Length: 609
Ligand code: M6R
Image (cartoon, rainbow, N blue to C red; front, side):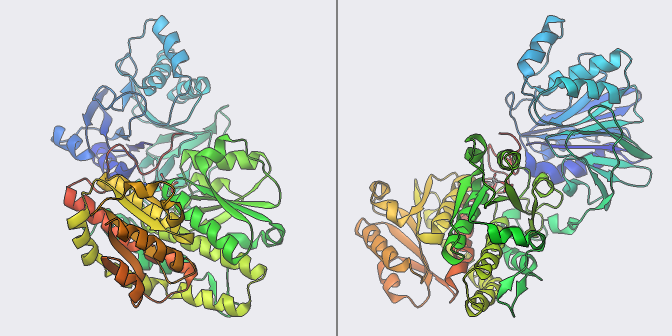
């Protein structure tokens, strides 16, 4: 869950690497480091804290035209300078950056300790550096030494390595953790994400799992773990660099919340069929015949993606009448799932690199299951490993706290459910009504964004509360959970999101006078029961903010304030009700003075299990 990068060419390696690391900082940000080669020796800068701290600690940067860099999210070993990457071998000849985990670290460390190696850190990565260092010391080329080390390792490793005695090359490898190469004229880059490359080049090569690349300023060659040549295709980097800029916003999260109308518009462009009252999800067409056979749909993902999966399962079963469920990918991966040929599995992941989601998808594929993917990142592992799928086109999501990916993922499940519903019993008239509702979403989300000042005022008053509850029913249960997750994640406020039905089985005991509760009460089949929940909450003195129809006087009479929903189709309500919850979390964190885009202990992409 770290960011790795490297550069070789004629320009300042320090500047190239720092530019890349700044784009990768969302992957981890507890410490950072760079190693370049100049005057025949490794030049090292490492520091605890954000990239900014590394820059401040290294005035003038490092010399040299080749180097590697890393931004860390700690797994093995605490956050300290000693544990910062890059790690060197004990002879200080090679330096290596690593994203992943060495599972057999203890066995390798014991062996090296017995041979007299003195380790300087608590990391698993240092074991890899030592193995590579020993290879080159024995006279192997850097590529052979890396192959030797990787063949002894069990686990995951996106790595880049530099050798002070061969500064004309870098070696990079992808074993379970993503690595892409950027191609320039007389220069090359390497990174764990195309986002780090787009500012420098439009051309990239994506390494597949088990591939190792040797880069020089003039080009690259790729081999597999048995040192057999691999042909690679040069691809265009699609996301616009400008889309990853902060612009006039104070935080990426606020920018991304506000980008939702455009993101939704982009996500549905060309995918709605107004005449047929249906949708086209490009990737699905080629499997159309098989989709008629599907008798069950299992959506899976983690965190926010799991909540979008839950909305998807609700839509699929309510509207397409196909039995559907959502599962936490982490649980699915380890429970030896019963996979059958009539089930469609749908993996959802913004990054497409979440280790638990990839593990679940691999387990299902191993057992012969059909897996569709929903992801935001073009060329991600999920996009490559699923049988077919769809990109949500939300644009780069930088803030660790996911917002626009949620609504875009829910939209993808709407399109999928609509297509399934039309392939089964939904009438053309009802399909057209749903299509119209989807077309109106960007404007309706804009309407919901106008609640920002109200959300800010509520956050001013309640943002630091000791506990906050979010309640919904039906498709809005996962939205309530998503609201609670946002608040926990960036404002560090204990919060629970739950079904109104579950309240009196325990959680109601948490309510005391003045405690904030957000209630999702759209005008659909859940409203009557939600009214009962509002009465229970009011009787116990909760301060209730309802997200409900603007003209719902009954709701208004039971709560402290209403954030109005525009008239909408019930199937799309999760995309509307979530907006004030995102804004509330944002303004709560702002009031409390936290680092909104980089919450403590977290990273954007959880590439370890
Ligand atoms: O990239 P993914 O969608 O697979 O990430 C899954 C979760 O780690 C992610 O949604 C996480 O819960 C967010 N930080 C929540 O805002």
